[in-house]
Amino acid sequence: MDKIIINGSKRLNGEITVQGAKNSVLPILVAALLVDGVSIIHNCPMLSDVDATVTILEYLGCKVEREGHTISVDSTDIKRYDVPDNLMREMRSSIVFLGGILGRMGKAVLSTPGGCEIGLRPIDLHLSSIEQLGVNFKTDGGFIDCSVGEKGLTGTKITLSFPSVGATENIILAAVLAHGTTVINNAAREPEISDLADFLNRCGAKIHGAGDSTVTVEGVKRLTSTEHTVIPDRIAASTYMIAGAITNGKICLKDIIPSHIGPTIQPLREAGCDIAVSGRWVCLSSPPRLKRIRMIRTMPYPGFPTDVQAQMMALTTVADGTSVIVENIFESRFKHIGELLRFGAKISAEGRMAVVEGVKHLNGANVKATDLRGGSAMILAGLCAHGATQITEIHHIDRGYEEPEKILESLGADIKRVKEDAKTEQSERGTQ
Ligand code: EPZ
Image: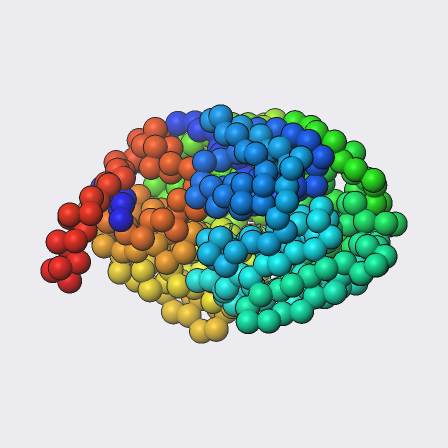
Protein backbone atom coordinates (compact mmCIF):
# COMPACT_ATOMS: atom_id res chain seq x y z
CA MET A 1 0.00 0.00 0.00
CA ASP A 2 1.27 3.52 -0.76
CA LYS A 3 2.18 5.85 2.04
CA ILE A 4 2.83 9.58 2.46
CA ILE A 5 6.06 10.83 4.05
CA ILE A 6 6.27 14.41 5.35
CA ASN A 7 9.18 16.36 6.85
CA GLY A 8 7.23 18.97 8.76
CA SER A 9 7.37 22.60 9.86
CA LYS A 10 7.86 24.10 6.42
CA ARG A 11 5.84 27.28 5.88
CA LEU A 12 3.45 27.04 2.92
CA ASN A 13 3.39 29.91 0.47
CA GLY A 14 1.85 30.34 -2.96
CA GLU A 15 -1.40 29.97 -4.83
CA ILE A 16 -3.38 26.92 -5.95
CA THR A 17 -6.49 25.97 -7.87
CA VAL A 18 -8.81 23.55 -6.10
CA GLN A 19 -10.25 20.35 -7.61
CA GLY A 20 -13.89 19.94 -8.64
CA ALA A 21 -16.27 18.95 -5.84
CA LYS A 22 -16.38 15.21 -5.09
CA ASN A 23 -19.80 15.51 -3.44
CA SER A 24 -21.13 17.28 -6.52
CA VAL A 25 -19.71 15.15 -9.32
CA LEU A 26 -20.98 11.90 -7.75
CA PRO A 27 -24.72 12.76 -7.83
CA ILE A 28 -24.32 14.57 -11.18
CA LEU A 29 -22.81 11.46 -12.78
CA VAL A 30 -25.77 9.48 -11.43
CA ALA A 31 -28.16 12.11 -12.80
CA ALA A 32 -26.72 11.44 -16.28
CA LEU A 33 -28.68 8.14 -16.13
CA LEU A 34 -31.86 10.22 -16.48
CA VAL A 35 -30.67 11.99 -19.63
CA ASP A 36 -31.69 10.51 -22.95
CA GLY A 37 -28.37 11.11 -24.65
CA VAL A 38 -24.83 12.25 -23.80
CA SER A 39 -23.94 14.34 -20.74
CA ILE A 40 -20.53 16.03 -20.77
CA ILE A 41 -19.27 16.89 -17.28
CA HIS A 42 -16.19 19.12 -16.87
CA ASN A 43 -13.94 19.71 -13.83
CA CYS A 44 -14.42 16.15 -12.53
CA PRO A 45 -11.73 15.42 -9.92
CA MET A 46 -9.64 12.26 -10.42
CA LEU A 47 -10.66 10.28 -7.33
CA SER A 48 -11.30 6.63 -6.51
CA ASP A 49 -14.91 7.50 -5.61
CA VAL A 50 -15.37 8.88 -9.14
CA ASP A 51 -13.82 5.67 -10.55
CA ALA A 52 -16.29 3.61 -8.49
CA THR A 53 -19.23 5.66 -9.79
CA VAL A 54 -18.08 5.28 -13.40
CA THR A 55 -17.76 1.51 -12.91
CA ILE A 56 -21.39 1.31 -11.79
CA LEU A 57 -22.53 3.49 -14.73
CA GLU A 58 -20.74 1.16 -17.15
CA TYR A 59 -22.22 -1.91 -15.42
CA LEU A 60 -25.69 -0.42 -15.97
CA GLY A 61 -24.95 -0.08 -19.70
CA CYS A 62 -23.76 3.52 -20.03
CA LYS A 63 -20.92 4.33 -22.40
CA VAL A 64 -18.45 6.47 -20.44
CA GLU A 65 -15.47 8.33 -21.88
CA ARG A 66 -12.90 10.12 -19.74
CA GLU A 67 -10.49 12.74 -21.02
CA GLY A 68 -8.56 14.44 -18.22
CA HIS A 69 -11.12 16.10 -15.96
CA THR A 70 -13.99 15.71 -18.46
CA ILE A 71 -16.32 12.71 -18.32
CA SER A 72 -18.92 12.00 -21.01
CA VAL A 73 -21.80 9.66 -20.15
CA ASP A 74 -24.04 8.23 -22.88
CA SER A 75 -26.97 6.53 -21.15
CA THR A 76 -29.01 5.91 -24.32
CA ASP A 77 -28.79 2.12 -24.07
CA ILE A 78 -28.89 1.35 -20.37
CA LYS A 79 -30.45 -2.02 -19.73
CA ARG A 80 -29.71 -3.00 -16.14
CA TYR A 81 -31.41 -1.69 -13.03
CA ASP A 82 -29.44 -3.64 -10.43
CA VAL A 83 -26.13 -2.80 -8.73
CA PRO A 84 -24.21 -5.80 -7.37
CA ASP A 85 -23.06 -5.87 -3.77
CA ASN A 86 -19.35 -5.63 -4.56
CA LEU A 87 -19.90 -2.40 -6.51
CA MET A 88 -22.27 -0.91 -3.92
CA ARG A 89 -19.74 -1.58 -1.17
CA GLU A 90 -16.97 0.21 -3.08
CA MET A 91 -18.43 3.54 -2.06
CA ARG A 92 -20.90 4.37 0.67
CA SER A 93 -22.57 7.15 -1.27
CA SER A 94 -23.63 4.74 -4.03
CA ILE A 95 -27.08 4.81 -2.40
CA VAL A 96 -27.70 7.87 -4.57
CA PHE A 97 -27.98 5.47 -7.53
CA LEU A 98 -31.36 4.47 -6.06
CA GLY A 99 -33.11 7.66 -7.22
CA GLY A 100 -31.29 7.73 -10.55
CA ILE A 101 -32.07 4.13 -11.52
CA LEU A 102 -35.69 4.38 -10.31
CA GLY A 103 -36.16 7.63 -12.22
CA ARG A 104 -34.95 6.04 -15.44
CA MET A 105 -35.99 2.38 -15.15
CA GLY A 106 -38.96 2.42 -12.76
CA LYS A 107 -37.31 -0.33 -10.74
CA ALA A 108 -34.06 -0.86 -8.87
CA VAL A 109 -32.29 -3.63 -6.97
CA LEU A 110 -29.40 -2.45 -4.79
CA SER A 111 -27.63 -3.84 -1.80
CA THR A 112 -27.88 -1.68 1.30
CA PRO A 113 -24.55 0.16 1.42
CA GLY A 114 -22.83 -0.77 4.68
CA GLY A 115 -21.93 1.71 7.35
CA CYS A 116 -18.46 3.15 7.25
CA GLU A 117 -15.71 4.47 9.50
CA ILE A 118 -17.73 7.53 10.54
CA GLY A 119 -21.08 6.01 11.35
CA LEU A 120 -23.89 3.57 10.64
CA ARG A 121 -25.11 5.69 7.75
CA PRO A 122 -28.78 4.51 7.85
CA ILE A 123 -30.99 5.03 4.78
CA ASP A 124 -34.41 5.24 6.44
CA LEU A 125 -34.99 8.77 5.13
CA HIS A 126 -34.13 7.67 1.57
CA LEU A 127 -36.56 4.73 1.73
CA SER A 128 -39.45 6.56 3.39
CA SER A 129 -39.08 9.36 0.80
CA ILE A 130 -39.17 7.14 -2.31
CA GLU A 131 -42.11 5.22 -0.78
CA GLN A 132 -44.04 8.51 -0.70
CA LEU A 133 -43.25 8.93 -4.42
CA GLY A 134 -45.12 5.69 -5.15
CA VAL A 135 -42.30 3.15 -4.93
CA ASN A 136 -42.92 -0.30 -3.41
CA PHE A 137 -39.84 -1.92 -1.93
CA LYS A 138 -38.84 -4.89 0.09
CA THR A 139 -35.56 -5.36 1.90
CA ASP A 140 -34.26 -8.89 2.05
CA GLY A 141 -30.81 -10.17 3.03
CA GLY A 142 -29.17 -6.79 2.64
CA PHE A 143 -30.84 -6.08 -0.71
CA ILE A 144 -33.51 -3.49 -1.50
CA ASP A 145 -35.82 -4.51 -4.34
CA CYS A 146 -37.85 -1.49 -5.54
CA SER A 147 -40.47 -1.03 -8.21
CA VAL A 148 -42.87 1.77 -8.97
CA GLY A 149 -46.63 1.10 -8.65
CA GLU A 150 -48.94 1.15 -11.66
CA LYS A 151 -49.20 4.96 -11.46
CA GLY A 152 -45.42 5.26 -11.81
CA LEU A 153 -43.40 7.80 -9.82
CA THR A 154 -45.87 10.42 -8.61
CA GLY A 155 -44.97 13.81 -7.19
CA THR A 156 -45.94 14.58 -3.59
CA LYS A 157 -45.02 16.69 -0.54
CA ILE A 158 -42.13 15.19 1.47
CA THR A 159 -40.84 16.54 4.78
CA LEU A 160 -37.41 15.28 5.86
CA SER A 161 -36.94 14.85 9.63
CA PHE A 162 -33.27 15.70 9.04
CA PRO A 163 -31.87 17.72 6.09
CA SER A 164 -30.07 14.66 4.71
CA VAL A 165 -27.88 15.49 1.70
CA GLY A 166 -28.19 12.05 0.12
CA ALA A 167 -31.92 11.73 0.76
CA THR A 168 -32.51 15.20 -0.78
CA GLU A 169 -30.50 14.12 -3.85
CA ASN A 170 -32.36 10.82 -4.16
CA ILE A 171 -35.73 12.56 -4.01
CA ILE A 172 -34.70 15.05 -6.70
CA LEU A 173 -33.37 12.25 -8.94
CA ALA A 174 -36.57 10.20 -8.56
CA ALA A 175 -38.85 13.25 -8.97
CA VAL A 176 -37.46 15.00 -12.07
CA LEU A 177 -39.24 12.60 -14.49
CA ALA A 178 -42.18 11.78 -12.18
CA HIS A 179 -45.83 12.68 -12.88
CA GLY A 180 -46.72 15.93 -11.11
CA THR A 181 -44.84 18.08 -8.66
CA THR A 182 -42.75 17.15 -5.62
CA VAL A 183 -42.09 19.57 -2.77
CA ILE A 184 -39.24 18.74 -0.38
CA ASN A 185 -39.50 20.45 3.02
CA ASN A 186 -36.41 20.62 5.26
CA ALA A 187 -34.22 19.82 2.26
CA ALA A 188 -30.43 19.89 2.61
CA ARG A 189 -29.00 23.26 1.56
CA GLU A 190 -25.43 22.17 0.67
CA PRO A 191 -24.01 23.84 -2.49
CA GLU A 192 -23.71 20.38 -4.07
CA ILE A 193 -27.53 20.17 -4.10
CA SER A 194 -27.66 23.44 -6.06
CA ASP A 195 -25.01 22.15 -8.46
CA LEU A 196 -27.03 18.97 -9.07
CA ALA A 197 -30.17 21.07 -9.70
CA ASP A 198 -28.25 23.38 -12.06
CA PHE A 199 -27.10 20.38 -14.10
CA LEU A 200 -30.61 18.88 -14.27
CA ASN A 201 -32.25 22.22 -15.12
CA ARG A 202 -29.74 22.63 -17.94
CA CYS A 203 -31.04 19.25 -19.21
CA GLY A 204 -34.63 20.56 -19.13
CA ALA A 205 -35.70 19.72 -15.58
CA LYS A 206 -37.84 22.17 -13.60
CA ILE A 207 -36.30 22.40 -10.12
CA HIS A 208 -36.79 25.52 -8.00
CA GLY A 209 -35.41 26.50 -4.61
CA ALA A 210 -32.33 24.24 -4.55
CA GLY A 211 -30.01 25.57 -1.84
CA ASP A 212 -32.99 26.56 0.31
CA SER A 213 -34.92 24.40 2.75
CA THR A 214 -37.89 24.01 0.39
CA VAL A 215 -37.19 22.55 -3.05
CA THR A 216 -39.88 22.11 -5.72
CA VAL A 217 -39.47 19.63 -8.58
CA GLU A 218 -41.98 19.76 -11.42
CA GLY A 219 -41.86 16.42 -13.27
CA VAL A 220 -41.01 16.67 -17.00
CA LYS A 221 -41.23 14.12 -19.81
CA ARG A 222 -37.56 13.85 -20.74
CA LEU A 223 -34.13 15.32 -20.18
CA THR A 224 -31.76 16.16 -23.02
CA SER A 225 -27.99 16.24 -23.43
CA THR A 226 -26.00 19.07 -21.93
CA GLU A 227 -22.54 20.12 -20.77
CA HIS A 228 -21.83 21.14 -17.19
CA THR A 229 -18.84 22.26 -15.13
CA VAL A 230 -18.72 20.98 -11.55
CA ILE A 231 -18.29 23.59 -8.78
CA PRO A 232 -14.98 23.78 -6.88
CA ASP A 233 -14.65 21.47 -3.86
CA ARG A 234 -15.36 23.55 -0.74
CA ILE A 235 -14.06 20.80 1.55
CA ALA A 236 -10.77 20.47 -0.30
CA ALA A 237 -10.53 24.29 -0.37
CA SER A 238 -11.07 24.43 3.40
CA THR A 239 -8.47 21.70 3.91
CA TYR A 240 -5.80 23.59 1.96
CA MET A 241 -6.63 26.85 3.75
CA ILE A 242 -6.06 25.07 7.04
CA ALA A 243 -2.74 23.78 5.65
CA GLY A 244 -1.70 27.42 5.17
CA ALA A 245 -2.93 28.35 8.65
CA ILE A 246 -1.28 25.46 10.50
CA THR A 247 2.16 26.13 8.91
CA ASN A 248 2.18 29.88 9.60
CA GLY A 249 1.97 30.28 5.83
CA LYS A 250 0.52 32.65 3.28
CA ILE A 251 -1.60 30.99 0.58
CA CYS A 252 -4.18 32.00 -2.01
CA LEU A 253 -6.90 29.81 -3.49
CA LYS A 254 -7.97 30.97 -6.94
CA ASP A 255 -11.22 30.28 -8.81
CA ILE A 256 -13.25 29.09 -5.84
CA ILE A 257 -16.70 30.19 -4.60
CA PRO A 258 -15.92 32.11 -1.37
CA SER A 259 -19.48 31.93 -0.02
CA HIS A 260 -19.20 28.11 0.00
CA ILE A 261 -16.30 28.22 2.45
CA GLY A 262 -17.79 30.97 4.61
CA PRO A 263 -18.41 28.51 7.49
CA THR A 264 -14.66 27.69 7.52
CA ILE A 265 -13.42 31.27 7.14
CA GLN A 266 -15.12 32.42 10.35
CA PRO A 267 -13.27 30.04 12.77
CA LEU A 268 -9.98 30.61 10.92
CA ARG A 269 -10.35 34.35 11.54
CA GLU A 270 -11.09 33.59 15.21
CA ALA A 271 -7.81 31.64 15.26
CA GLY A 272 -6.05 34.83 14.20
CA CYS A 273 -5.72 34.29 10.44
CA ASP A 274 -6.03 37.25 8.14
CA ILE A 275 -8.33 36.22 5.26
CA ALA A 276 -9.03 38.42 2.25
CA VAL A 277 -11.79 37.59 -0.25
CA SER A 278 -11.98 39.14 -3.70
CA GLY A 279 -14.06 37.71 -6.53
CA ARG A 280 -13.19 34.04 -6.81
CA TRP A 281 -9.92 34.46 -4.84
CA VAL A 282 -9.42 33.80 -1.14
CA CYS A 283 -6.04 34.60 0.45
CA LEU A 284 -5.01 33.57 3.97
CA SER A 285 -2.04 34.62 6.04
CA SER A 286 -1.49 33.00 9.38
CA PRO A 287 -0.15 34.50 12.64
CA PRO A 288 3.05 33.06 14.20
CA ARG A 289 0.88 31.48 16.94
CA LEU A 290 -2.73 30.49 16.27
CA LYS A 291 -5.34 31.33 18.87
CA ARG A 292 -7.76 28.70 20.23
CA ILE A 293 -11.23 28.43 18.66
CA ARG A 294 -13.72 28.60 21.51
CA MET A 295 -16.37 26.26 20.07
CA ILE A 296 -16.78 24.43 16.75
CA ARG A 297 -20.18 22.78 16.28
CA THR A 298 -20.70 20.80 13.05
CA MET A 299 -24.11 21.55 11.52
CA PRO A 300 -25.89 21.10 8.18
CA TYR A 301 -24.94 23.79 5.64
CA PRO A 302 -24.60 26.75 6.07
CA GLY A 303 -23.29 25.68 9.49
CA PHE A 304 -19.72 24.48 10.04
CA PRO A 305 -19.20 21.38 7.81
CA THR A 306 -18.69 18.00 9.47
CA ASP A 307 -16.30 17.23 6.59
CA VAL A 308 -13.87 19.85 7.92
CA GLN A 309 -14.12 18.82 11.59
CA ALA A 310 -11.04 16.58 11.64
CA GLN A 311 -8.93 19.13 9.78
CA MET A 312 -9.94 21.98 12.12
CA MET A 313 -9.21 19.73 15.09
CA ALA A 314 -5.67 19.26 13.79
CA LEU A 315 -5.30 23.04 13.71
CA THR A 316 -6.53 23.47 17.29
CA THR A 317 -3.92 21.00 18.59
CA VAL A 318 -1.25 23.69 18.07
CA ALA A 319 -3.38 26.75 18.87
CA ASP A 320 -2.77 28.76 22.02
CA GLY A 321 -5.45 27.74 24.53
CA THR A 322 -8.30 25.23 24.77
CA SER A 323 -10.78 24.63 21.93
CA VAL A 324 -14.03 22.62 22.07
CA ILE A 325 -15.37 20.64 19.12
CA VAL A 326 -18.88 19.14 18.98
CA GLU A 327 -19.68 16.68 16.16
CA ASN A 328 -23.44 16.87 15.65
CA ILE A 329 -23.78 15.08 12.32
CA PHE A 330 -22.10 11.64 12.58
CA GLU A 331 -22.03 9.47 15.67
CA SER A 332 -18.45 8.24 15.39
CA ARG A 333 -16.43 10.84 13.56
CA PHE A 334 -13.62 11.14 16.15
CA LYS A 335 -11.49 8.19 15.03
CA HIS A 336 -8.69 10.59 14.03
CA ILE A 337 -8.19 11.61 17.69
CA GLY A 338 -6.25 8.42 18.48
CA GLU A 339 -3.86 9.19 15.64
CA LEU A 340 -3.50 12.89 16.57
CA LEU A 341 -2.45 11.81 20.10
CA ARG A 342 0.52 10.02 18.53
CA PHE A 343 1.81 13.44 17.40
CA GLY A 344 1.74 14.61 21.06
CA ALA A 345 -1.62 16.40 20.82
CA LYS A 346 -3.63 16.85 24.04
CA ILE A 347 -7.25 15.88 23.34
CA SER A 348 -9.96 14.37 25.50
CA ALA A 349 -13.32 13.28 24.10
CA GLU A 350 -16.62 12.13 25.51
CA GLY A 351 -19.50 11.22 23.17
CA ARG A 352 -19.78 13.92 20.54
CA MET A 353 -17.58 16.46 22.34
CA ALA A 354 -13.80 16.80 22.14
CA VAL A 355 -11.70 19.21 24.21
CA VAL A 356 -8.35 20.16 22.67
CA GLU A 357 -5.61 21.80 24.75
CA GLY A 358 -3.16 23.45 22.37
CA VAL A 359 0.51 22.42 22.65
CA LYS A 360 3.62 24.34 21.55
CA HIS A 361 4.25 21.99 18.67
CA LEU A 362 3.57 18.46 17.47
CA ASN A 363 6.26 15.85 16.83
CA GLY A 364 6.35 13.75 13.68
CA ALA A 365 4.80 10.28 14.06
CA ASN A 366 3.86 7.09 12.21
CA VAL A 367 0.09 7.26 11.79
CA LYS A 368 -2.68 5.93 9.57
CA ALA A 369 -5.60 7.50 7.81
CA THR A 370 -8.68 6.34 9.71
CA ASP A 371 -11.09 7.65 7.05
CA LEU A 372 -11.15 10.23 4.24
CA ARG A 373 -11.17 13.47 6.25
CA GLY A 374 -9.32 11.95 9.19
CA GLY A 375 -6.58 11.14 6.68
CA SER A 376 -6.39 14.75 5.55
CA ALA A 377 -6.06 15.76 9.22
CA MET A 378 -2.99 13.49 9.45
CA ILE A 379 -1.41 15.35 6.52
CA LEU A 380 -2.11 18.71 8.21
CA ALA A 381 -0.60 17.54 11.50
CA GLY A 382 2.43 16.18 9.67
CA LEU A 383 2.92 19.49 7.85
CA CYS A 384 3.32 21.42 11.10
CA ALA A 385 4.99 18.73 13.24
CA HIS A 386 8.72 18.83 14.02
CA GLY A 387 10.44 15.91 12.29
CA ALA A 388 9.21 13.17 9.96
CA THR A 389 5.67 11.76 9.65
CA GLN A 390 4.62 8.62 7.82
CA ILE A 391 0.94 8.10 6.91
CA THR A 392 -0.35 4.70 5.82
CA GLU A 393 -3.84 3.55 4.68
CA ILE A 394 -3.84 6.53 2.32
CA HIS A 395 -6.40 4.89 0.03
CA HIS A 396 -8.93 6.65 2.28
CA ILE A 397 -7.42 10.01 1.25
CA ASP A 398 -7.45 9.11 -2.45
CA ARG A 399 -11.24 8.79 -2.27
CA GLY A 400 -11.62 12.56 -1.92
CA TYR A 401 -8.40 14.42 -2.67
CA GLU A 402 -6.73 14.54 -6.11
CA GLU A 403 -2.93 14.32 -5.65
CA PRO A 404 -2.81 16.33 -2.41
CA GLU A 405 0.94 15.72 -2.10
CA LYS A 406 1.54 17.50 -5.43
CA ILE A 407 -0.62 20.48 -4.44
CA LEU A 408 1.14 20.81 -1.07
CA GLU A 409 4.60 20.32 -2.59
CA SER A 410 3.84 23.21 -4.98
CA LEU A 411 3.29 25.35 -1.85
CA GLY A 412 6.67 24.39 -0.38
CA ALA A 413 5.84 21.32 1.72
CA ASP A 414 8.39 18.52 1.97
CA ILE A 415 5.92 15.74 1.20
CA LYS A 416 6.20 12.58 -0.92
CA ARG A 417 3.98 9.69 -1.87
CA VAL A 418 5.97 6.45 -1.62
CA LYS A 419 4.71 3.54 -3.66
CA GLU A 420 5.14 0.37 -1.70
CA ASP A 421 5.71 -2.59 -4.00
CA ALA A 422 4.31 -5.92 -3.04
CA LYS A 423 7.71 -7.32 -1.98
CA THR A 424 8.36 -4.57 0.59
CA GLU A 425 4.83 -4.87 1.79
CA GLN A 426 5.18 -8.65 2.06
CA SER A 427 8.41 -8.32 4.02
CA GLU A 428 6.92 -5.58 6.27
CA ARG A 429 3.90 -7.77 6.92
CA GLY A 430 6.27 -10.60 7.67
CA THR A 431 8.06 -8.59 10.35
CA GLN A 432 4.82 -7.38 11.97
C1 EPZ B 1 -23.08 13.57 2.44
O1 EPZ B 1 -23.23 12.29 3.02
C2 EPZ B 1 -21.61 13.68 2.06
N1 EPZ B 1 -21.27 12.65 1.10
C3 EPZ B 1 -20.76 13.52 3.32
O2 EPZ B 1 -19.41 13.72 2.92
C4 EPZ B 1 -21.15 14.61 4.31
O3 EPZ B 1 -20.41 14.42 5.49
C5 EPZ B 1 -22.65 14.53 4.61
O4 EPZ B 1 -23.39 14.61 3.38
C6 EPZ B 1 -23.12 15.64 5.52
O5 EPZ B 1 -22.81 16.87 4.94
C7 EPZ B 1 -21.57 12.85 -0.20
O6 EPZ B 1 -22.16 13.85 -0.58
C8 EPZ B 1 -21.13 11.79 -1.16
P1 EPZ B 1 -26.50 12.83 5.24
P2 EPZ B 1 -24.73 11.71 3.33
O7 EPZ B 1 -27.52 11.94 4.64
O8 EPZ B 1 -25.64 12.12 2.25
C9 EPZ B 1 -28.21 10.64 9.09
C10 EPZ B 1 -17.12 13.27 2.80
O9 EPZ B 1 -16.25 13.27 3.68
N2 EPZ B 1 -29.13 9.96 8.16
O10 EPZ B 1 -26.69 14.30 5.18
O11 EPZ B 1 -24.61 10.27 3.65
C11 EPZ B 1 -26.77 10.13 8.91
O12 EPZ B 1 -26.56 8.96 9.65
C12 EPZ B 1 -18.47 12.64 3.08
O13 EPZ B 1 -17.00 13.78 1.66
C13 EPZ B 1 -30.15 9.16 8.70
O14 EPZ B 1 -30.28 9.02 9.90
O15 EPZ B 1 -25.07 12.52 4.66
C14 EPZ B 1 -25.96 11.27 9.43
O16 EPZ B 1 -25.91 11.18 10.84
C15 EPZ B 1 -18.54 11.98 4.45
N3 EPZ B 1 -30.99 8.52 7.84
C16 EPZ B 1 -26.78 12.50 9.04
O17 EPZ B 1 -28.10 12.03 8.75
C17 EPZ B 1 -30.87 8.64 6.49
O18 EPZ B 1 -31.70 8.04 5.76
C18 EPZ B 1 -26.24 13.22 7.81
O19 EPZ B 1 -26.29 12.33 6.75
C19 EPZ B 1 -29.83 9.44 5.96
C20 EPZ B 1 -28.98 10.10 6.83
